[in-house]
Length: 120
Image 1 (cartoon, rainbow, N blue to C red):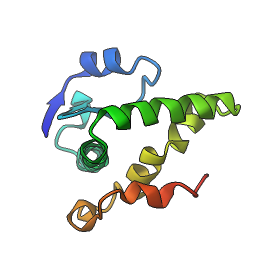
Image 2 (tube, rainbow, N blue to C red):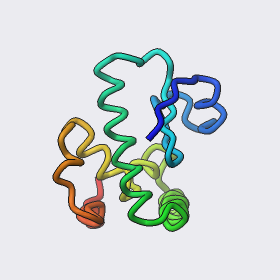
Image 3 (tube, rainbow, N blue to C red):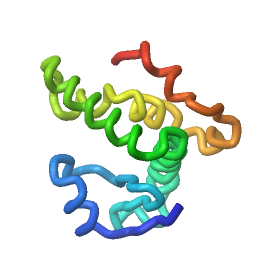
Image 4 (cartoon, one colour):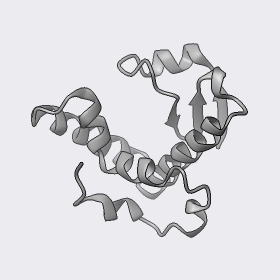
């Protein structure tokens, strides 16, 4: 895992979500410069590390395809951009567990599957 603090790169990679704090593209975590060294940075890094674990479990390509299809399906069901993003199974796990900085120490493989029935 390599953490990069770069606002320009983050805006380039996520033009539809201008307010986000970070994004993961295995093995990189790209974060806003302003959060470096803050509690928000620790929580955001933990959120993104959960995504790295998910990406490794699904060999990146499956993760990416599943992620995009989930987002498009949410939009097709009439959800807003944000609701569609938050409804993605991988995001549900990461948002639910991002404040637990020890979560990855005890997380079981494919734990994101525990979030498949939860919706809003």
